[in-house]
Amino acid sequence: MTAPGAAGTAPGAAGTAPGAAGTAPGAAGSAADWWGTEDVCVRFGATLALDHVSFRAEPGRVSAVVGGDGAGRTTLLRCLAGALAPASGRVQRPAALATGYLSAGSGTYPDLSVTENLAFRAAAYRIPPQQARQRSAELLARAGLDQATGRLAGQLSGGMRQKLGVIAAMLHHPGLLVLDEPTTGVDPVSRAGLWWLIARAAADGAAVVLATSYLDEAERAQHVLVLDAGSELASGTPEQIVAAMRGTLTVAGTRPAGEAGRRSWRREGRWRVWDPGDGTAHGAAVRPDLQDAVTVAALARELAQAGTGEESR
Image (tube, rainbow, N blue to C red; front, side):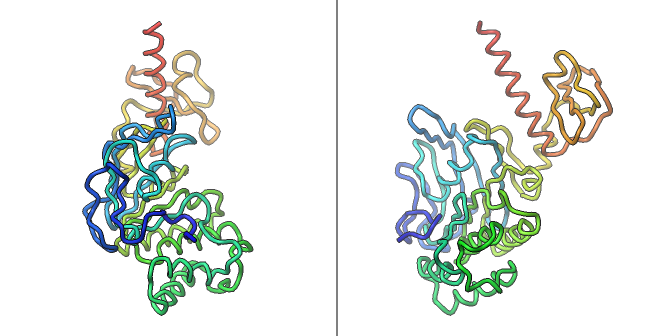
């Protein structure tokens, strides 16, 4: 019986996908300067799900993988966790016992209590019982779950289940903690509790990688990778991604006509208009944030591809 969300590699194995070079050496708790991928490609039949993606997560830091549906976020995280072998490229990750993985969903058994879920996960990761009880009690108390230890996981609210799943994934002090959209659909109070757990894992020395569709959350990460249709759209710190945005951004009350309309989008009841550098102003200038910079990067790629298609006809 495998713990939900846990990578299926044999405990203690070095755990690189077959054919990928350079996994950090073996025992749980081994350290490296980074975990991640280099030039990784993944195919599902004729579909290229990841197209030469390189990504590095450093110990003690939170890294975010951002993108829309079909962007490749979950595929990348599964490669990092050892649950999926890439077709080519290199995956560097710790041994299975030094990896914590929460797949999409809570990763818990609904018919086991909170205490039983954590006891099962502790046994799977070979944590001594007394140490497991102490660690569980501490994390449950800080996450506000200490009064729910006897409840079945299936009877918890969505936010409580997600917090339990994150606690289970970080229970064994992993060197790499991989979380697939841990805050999706969670209320603001529970989201704050989840971010406390995420920050705690990083403070304990883990390289934390999380997938999210919320760019305001990505701004809290030290490194952000933005994926679009399986390839990198932007990468760096949130500040670097914003600084790399070329052109200027203005805000208008109505959508402009013509070419400028193709470079505009609605946000907070008004129209953002991106000027790539032709000097035409369509409203008051605003300072872009990460959401703006990612939107502009996607627009620039879309317009470039459209232009290439027109030239080829």
